[in-house]
Image 1 (cartoon, rainbow, N blue to C red):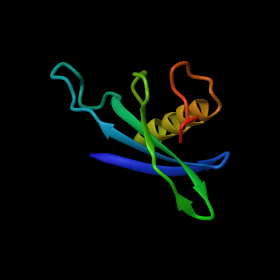
Image 2 (cartoon, helix red, strand yellow; image 1 turned 45 degrees about the vertical axis):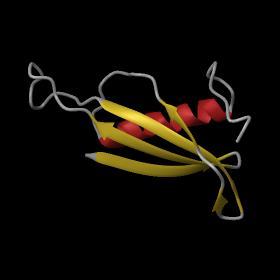
Image 3 (cartoon, rainbow, N blue to C red; image 1 turned 45 degrees about the horizontal axis):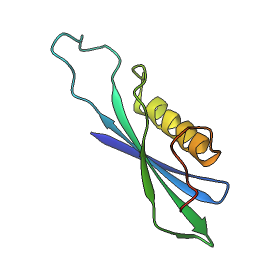
Length: 93
C-alpha cells in the first residue's frame, strides 16, 4: 500500500510517496510500521510543474501512521530545498 501527498514550498512543488514495508515475521501485528519515503521535487510556476528530481528519505524510526510518514517526507524535502542536507540539492532543477 502506498500513500501520496503534495505540497508547495519556496517555488517548488513537493510530492511525497510513503510505501509501507512488509512486516518482519517477528514483528507484532499491532506494532508500528516502517515506510520507505520518496520525495519528488520540481520547480513550479503559474500552476505548471517542471522536471522532477527524486530524493530518498533516510531510514527513520517506525511511524504511527502513513500521515506521520508523509509529514517526515515533507520536512525532508523542505530541508533539501533549504540546502540543509549535504549532498542533496535542487540547484539543477
